[in-house]
Length: 370
Image 1 (cartoon, rainbow, N blue to C red):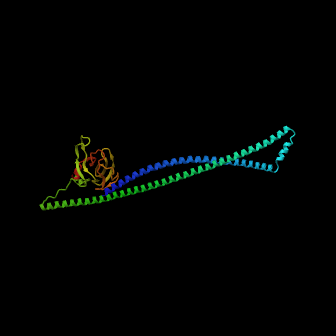
Image 2 (cartoon, rainbow, N blue to C red; image 1 turned 180 degrees about the vertical axis):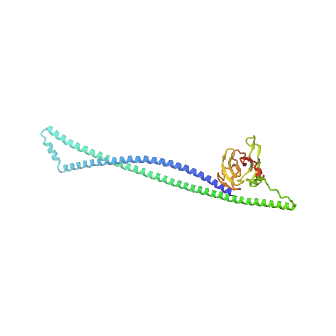
Image 3 (cartoon, rainbow, N blue to C red; image 1 turned 45 degrees about the vertical axis):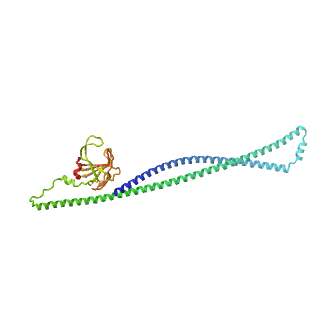
């Protein structure tokens, strides 16, 4: 049950990892969009600066042109008032009649014509300047409208990116919180497994001690019944005492024993340093000890090595990747440490279990009683 919960949490964490990678991709894309927008803003700001310079130039030219028009208008109005109040057709006729000769007469007519032409040129220039002024005012207005449109678009783009960034940040926070919560729940389940395993180990030891005590009592009682005068010989088989501390570590059947065999993959004769147990499901620590290695090897696949002290070590090979212990961790007898798999050089789901005594392999069967 607990193994299923851990597996569920690990699958959930894998899903969260995928979401994190997806969001990291979205963040990278957004960062690229931001960089593009910053470049766009820079170009638009340069364009606005240029428009502002053009507007200032237009304003200056408009003021100068308006001053010319006003000055010219004032002169024309003054001249018109002068003509209106002082000049009349009789004056012009008198001017011509007072000519001394034909040459003088023609000269005076030419002067009058020049004055009239000059006034016409002034009026034409005045009209042209007014049209130019109107054109510059239109340009000024268009450039102001263009600059305002650029500002409005930039504000829209910045607001849009700000919203996207806020949304992604919220997603990241949510995923991180969810990931941390799932990891915490997984650790809690593993700790719960450890507690149960320790309780199971203590109970198993008590049962073994009780069984040994009962066996001794039975032998003593049998000796009494047989009236044996010789006391029972003490058991000096230290190996047997050691063996009683190992428990079966997985469910399944033994498919290959310790010793020489034809290798199932390479097909040649090789010495098998452990026993193969085929099946599936959880694997427990056969004895308590300290995890030396929890890693991957091309041949063994994912494997765990435990140091039990007094010269003994055990190795559990071809596990699934989601191992439940790590290097340096203390484990109790019966504590789940991994799940049977087929990683490394393997022909199917099984466990390869090895026991080392003082650096050399020994047959695990005699220790497990199988």
